[in-house]
Length: 111
Image 1: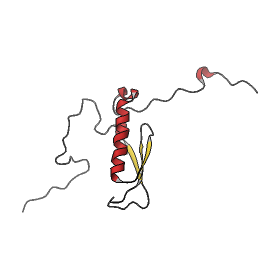
Image 2: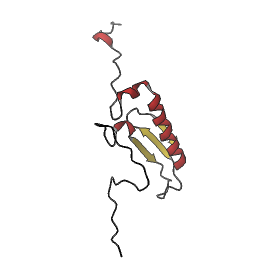
Image 3: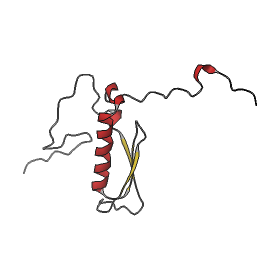
Image 4: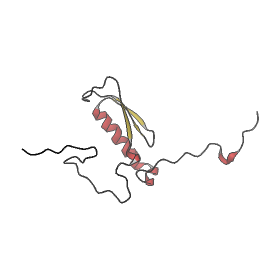
């Protein structure tokens, strides 16, 4: 009998092609981070799964009613990011702050 190796967190999956990373790019870029929240009636085997997904960098949110719907939501968000003008910042970068609505530090006029 052979000894079976245990899988570890972060282990590469067999059969999944791994493209080489460009130099200086993180393995897990922030620009591809998502929060997934399942409803209370989703089962642990995920045969029945519903909830919401949020892209952490942009705060884009979407609801899903199945695992296929979750995959579609994530794919749509990633596609939108790839075509967005800010995508030129590169993967892993955090969004910049929106300019303040009080430009120039001007004070409000008294009523």
